[in-house]
Image (cartoon, rainbow, N blue to C red; front, top):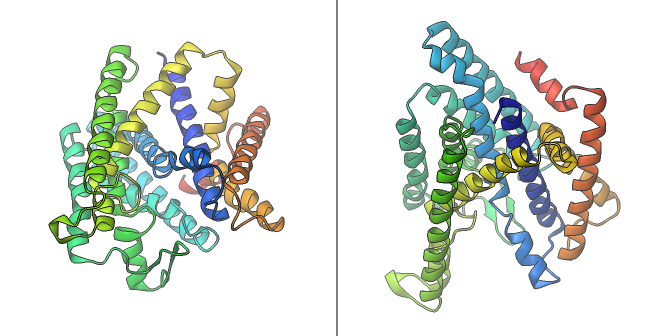
Length: 361
């Protein structure tokens, strides 16, 4: 697989991640809890998985950005690469925090902190990357022992209070926000490791896919079994509701089993996208998705500013059916593809991607 096809595969995965995040965020914004149980289940499949895929892909991107410097062992080149990551991190933090009042579930400012960690770790070995990822994952349950995970949250309306205080901001970013550094930074570090694998080799991709599939299936079924077994239990001095939460593989709270399941699924999706981009390289669908993935930053911001903005003007935010929520998400995704194809017909990169590149250079 040549480099261009490899990039196409990652961008297809990035497009799918954006689509999944649109489905999840529209559902949250519309408070879509009524309607078809099947459609509610379908929408739930994307929760915590699409955003995890997005972060893993960011880690892959960090590796591509820094590989030349890392392999050169040149001090000056490594400093330049580290400085580039730091600039990206600070810009993402500023943009993300400015964006948060509009969309509280923003992931960009969290990205900035992940990038700060990446700037310190990109020269380490593969084993150390996995070690640091594991440490960050395991830090979360340790923090839960000492701190109240629910502090700041109003779960009834899914809103985080006192965010703009020092205490609230630190807690939100590092522990109990939508995508806290502990443990979410592990997704990016894992993506850095994944980007170092020889993914152009079919044999390597097949091995990674098989391993990821087995880990994903075992994790999901083991914890499904535990939730079923303890459904009406009060063991360990905990009520059945607390035990269901403890053995959950959902995004909130992000226990290690969630991190493992979401990472495994991300690997599977990425490998399939790489295979798809090779086999159907000249397909229009491949090219459309590839171009959509190139405008990921623009579309991420647009799905809130434009997508939800239009819905708000139509008085369609809040207490909508899951059918209307999914229809709205699908409509936005279709227009995203059309916009991306037309934009890249006349320009080399997306509008916000261009701004971001200018500012970080």
